[in-house]
Length: 79
Image 1 (spheres, rainbow, N blue to C red):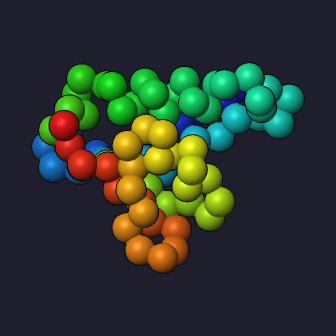
Image 2: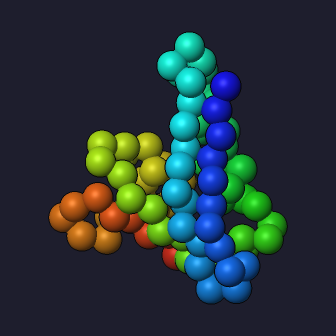
């Protein structure tokens, strides 16, 4: 149905590499659930999150990510 993948050192930062939902299961909130789980994941607390997106800026902004430049990259400050 879908998955999300992070690369992390569990100390300073994590890179949210992928959030992919199979076409048959889109619009069910599964991607939102995955992102919500990542930002609340205990082992990532204190880590700054980074990601790149072409067109989903408004989605990630709902989870605390900020646009880092005029392009694709976004970041989320550690809590």
